[in-house]
Image (cartoon, rainbow, N blue to C red; front, side, top):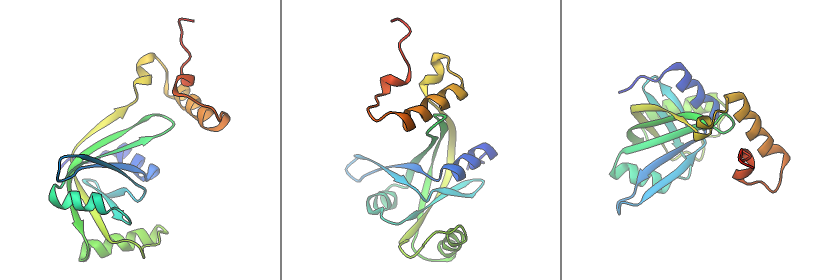
Length: 163
């Protein structure tokens, strides 16, 4: 198990949206956004199965998973690889429901909780930083992109320097 750093845990708690990758029985990939993703402790992430039948089925057959969490404005985040365990009942399941309730979640639709033991964690950084942009500039460009234009393209984010 890898111990999660404070910045990792803070980003996961702040974003609450992670993309969970699994592998189906036929080998095909499955990536699913999880808005309930949070930190369970300094070695585990957790999410609630609200409507995740493919993700849960895949994890029961092959518990290996990767989760990506990215701040959409800074274009930085983390990737977490680990082993998932699905809980439909039992002490951990009810502790997780209690924690979600305390945080204001409606837990009536939760079918299971998925605890991920983090075995590897690494930074995830957009290639835009390789072009020499600083975080403040990247954030400004993405905030502008998301708030000011209706007919946006990715090309609009970084004007070509050779024109």
